[in-house]
Length: 180
Image (cartoon, rainbow, N blue to C red; front, side):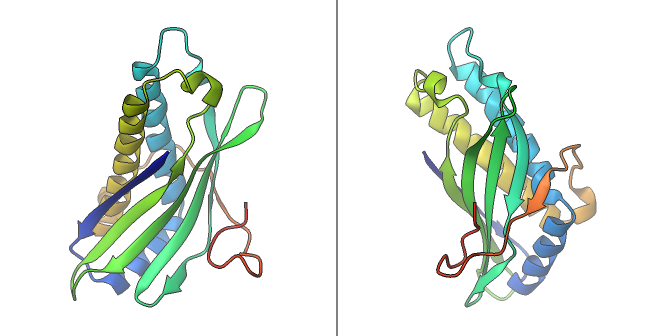
Protein backbone atom coordinates (compact mmCIF):
# COMPACT_ATOMS: atom_id res chain seq x y z
CA UNK A 1 0.00 0.00 0.00
CA UNK A 2 1.17 3.54 -0.73
CA UNK A 3 1.69 5.86 2.23
CA UNK A 4 2.89 9.43 2.50
CA UNK A 5 3.03 12.38 4.82
CA UNK A 6 4.72 15.75 4.98
CA UNK A 7 5.59 18.29 7.65
CA UNK A 8 6.56 21.92 7.25
CA UNK A 9 9.73 22.88 9.16
CA UNK A 10 10.66 26.39 10.28
CA UNK A 11 14.26 26.06 9.09
CA UNK A 12 15.89 26.92 5.78
CA UNK A 13 16.36 24.08 3.32
CA UNK A 14 20.18 24.19 3.32
CA UNK A 15 20.33 24.00 7.11
CA UNK A 16 17.69 21.21 7.17
CA UNK A 17 19.59 19.25 4.51
CA UNK A 18 22.87 19.47 6.44
CA UNK A 19 21.21 18.52 9.75
CA UNK A 20 19.41 15.54 8.27
CA UNK A 21 22.56 14.32 6.51
CA UNK A 22 24.44 14.48 9.83
CA UNK A 23 21.58 12.83 11.74
CA UNK A 24 21.30 10.07 9.13
CA UNK A 25 25.01 9.29 9.51
CA UNK A 26 24.59 9.23 13.30
CA UNK A 27 21.84 6.55 13.17
CA UNK A 28 18.70 8.65 13.59
CA UNK A 29 16.89 6.94 10.72
CA UNK A 30 17.54 3.50 12.20
CA UNK A 31 16.29 4.52 15.64
CA UNK A 32 13.21 6.31 14.27
CA UNK A 33 12.50 3.37 11.94
CA UNK A 34 12.64 0.91 14.81
CA UNK A 35 10.16 2.92 16.85
CA UNK A 36 7.80 3.44 13.91
CA UNK A 37 7.97 -0.24 12.95
CA UNK A 38 7.18 -1.30 16.53
CA UNK A 39 4.16 1.05 16.44
CA UNK A 40 3.09 -0.38 13.07
CA UNK A 41 3.32 -3.95 14.38
CA UNK A 42 1.33 -3.09 17.52
CA UNK A 43 -1.33 -1.40 15.38
CA UNK A 44 -1.58 -4.38 13.04
CA UNK A 45 -2.11 -6.67 16.01
CA UNK A 46 -4.90 -4.34 17.25
CA UNK A 47 -6.73 -4.40 13.89
CA UNK A 48 -6.02 -8.11 13.34
CA UNK A 49 -7.93 -11.13 14.37
CA UNK A 50 -6.98 -12.94 17.58
CA UNK A 51 -4.10 -15.33 17.12
CA UNK A 52 -2.33 -13.49 14.28
CA UNK A 53 1.42 -13.98 14.38
CA UNK A 54 2.42 -10.51 13.19
CA UNK A 55 4.71 -9.96 16.17
CA UNK A 56 7.04 -12.69 14.91
CA UNK A 57 8.77 -10.20 12.62
CA UNK A 58 11.30 -7.64 13.87
CA UNK A 59 13.05 -4.88 12.00
CA UNK A 60 16.48 -6.22 11.17
CA UNK A 61 18.02 -3.62 8.93
CA UNK A 62 17.38 -0.10 7.71
CA UNK A 63 19.20 0.73 4.50
CA UNK A 64 19.57 4.36 3.52
CA UNK A 65 21.12 5.71 0.36
CA UNK A 66 23.45 8.66 0.29
CA UNK A 67 21.73 12.00 -0.19
CA UNK A 68 20.94 12.88 -3.80
CA UNK A 69 20.01 16.41 -4.83
CA UNK A 70 17.57 17.43 -7.55
CA UNK A 71 17.54 21.17 -8.01
CA UNK A 72 16.80 22.60 -4.57
CA UNK A 73 15.52 19.31 -3.12
CA UNK A 74 17.42 16.57 -1.31
CA UNK A 75 16.37 12.92 -1.36
CA UNK A 76 17.30 9.80 0.59
CA UNK A 77 15.95 6.39 -0.47
CA UNK A 78 15.29 4.03 2.41
CA UNK A 79 14.33 0.39 2.89
CA UNK A 80 13.16 -1.36 6.04
CA UNK A 81 13.89 -5.07 6.09
CA UNK A 82 12.34 -7.32 8.70
CA UNK A 83 13.42 -10.75 9.86
CA UNK A 84 11.24 -13.63 10.95
CA UNK A 85 12.25 -16.08 13.64
CA UNK A 86 13.98 -18.19 10.99
CA UNK A 87 16.11 -15.19 9.98
CA UNK A 88 14.61 -14.67 6.52
CA UNK A 89 14.68 -10.99 5.49
CA UNK A 90 11.64 -9.42 3.86
CA UNK A 91 11.27 -5.82 2.65
CA UNK A 92 8.60 -4.01 4.69
CA UNK A 93 8.97 -0.45 3.39
CA UNK A 94 10.60 1.23 0.42
CA UNK A 95 10.35 5.00 0.83
CA UNK A 96 11.87 8.31 -0.10
CA UNK A 97 12.66 11.00 2.43
CA UNK A 98 12.62 14.37 0.70
CA UNK A 99 13.46 17.89 1.83
CA UNK A 100 12.18 20.73 -0.37
CA UNK A 101 12.36 24.49 0.12
CA UNK A 102 9.11 26.17 1.17
CA UNK A 103 10.38 29.74 1.31
CA UNK A 104 13.58 31.35 2.59
CA UNK A 105 13.23 30.03 6.16
CA UNK A 106 11.04 26.97 5.70
CA UNK A 107 11.37 23.44 4.37
CA UNK A 108 8.92 20.63 3.67
CA UNK A 109 9.94 17.20 4.93
CA UNK A 110 8.04 14.51 3.00
CA UNK A 111 8.16 10.74 3.36
CA UNK A 112 6.39 8.60 0.78
CA UNK A 113 6.65 4.99 -0.20
CA UNK A 114 5.20 1.53 -0.38
CA UNK A 115 4.81 -0.60 2.71
CA UNK A 116 4.16 -4.30 2.88
CA UNK A 117 2.74 -5.70 6.12
CA UNK A 118 4.85 -8.58 7.43
CA UNK A 119 3.39 -12.02 7.02
CA UNK A 120 1.37 -10.78 4.06
CA UNK A 121 -0.64 -14.00 3.87
CA UNK A 122 -1.92 -13.45 7.43
CA UNK A 123 -2.24 -9.68 7.01
CA UNK A 124 -4.35 -10.27 3.88
CA UNK A 125 -7.27 -11.10 6.18
CA UNK A 126 -7.01 -7.76 7.98
CA UNK A 127 -9.35 -4.86 7.32
CA UNK A 128 -7.68 -2.91 4.46
CA UNK A 129 -8.83 0.47 5.75
CA UNK A 130 -7.60 -0.27 9.27
CA UNK A 131 -4.30 -1.63 7.96
CA UNK A 132 -3.78 1.50 5.85
CA UNK A 133 -4.66 3.76 8.79
CA UNK A 134 -2.11 1.97 10.99
CA UNK A 135 0.61 2.30 8.33
CA UNK A 136 -0.15 6.01 7.88
CA UNK A 137 0.06 6.57 11.65
CA UNK A 138 3.43 4.80 11.80
CA UNK A 139 4.91 6.82 8.92
CA UNK A 140 3.56 10.03 10.49
CA UNK A 141 5.30 9.14 13.77
CA UNK A 142 8.51 8.37 11.87
CA UNK A 143 8.34 11.69 9.99
CA UNK A 144 7.51 13.63 13.16
CA UNK A 145 10.56 12.20 14.91
CA UNK A 146 12.80 13.21 11.99
CA UNK A 147 11.24 16.69 12.00
CA UNK A 148 11.81 17.08 15.75
CA UNK A 149 15.41 15.98 15.33
CA UNK A 150 16.06 18.46 12.54
CA UNK A 151 14.47 21.28 14.55
CA UNK A 152 16.31 20.44 17.78
CA UNK A 153 18.60 17.35 17.66
CA UNK A 154 19.32 17.22 21.43
CA UNK A 155 15.58 17.06 22.21
CA UNK A 156 14.97 14.09 19.93
CA UNK A 157 14.26 10.73 21.61
CA UNK A 158 17.11 8.22 21.53
CA UNK A 159 15.79 4.66 21.19
CA UNK A 160 17.91 1.56 21.24
CA UNK A 161 17.43 0.69 17.55
CA UNK A 162 20.80 1.17 15.82
CA UNK A 163 20.38 -0.81 12.63
CA UNK A 164 21.13 1.70 9.89
CA UNK A 165 23.45 0.47 7.18
CA UNK A 166 24.44 2.59 4.23
CA UNK A 167 23.01 1.32 0.98
CA UNK A 168 25.32 0.46 -1.87
CA UNK A 169 25.95 3.28 -4.33
CA UNK A 170 23.28 3.45 -7.03
CA UNK A 171 24.12 1.38 -10.08
CA UNK A 172 24.40 3.01 -13.48
CA UNK A 173 20.98 3.55 -14.99
CA UNK A 174 19.17 3.37 -11.65
CA UNK A 175 19.07 7.11 -10.98
CA UNK A 176 18.75 8.06 -7.37
CA UNK A 177 17.21 4.81 -6.15
CA UNK A 178 19.11 2.69 -3.75
CA UNK A 179 20.20 -0.72 -4.94
CA UNK A 180 18.27 -3.37 -3.01
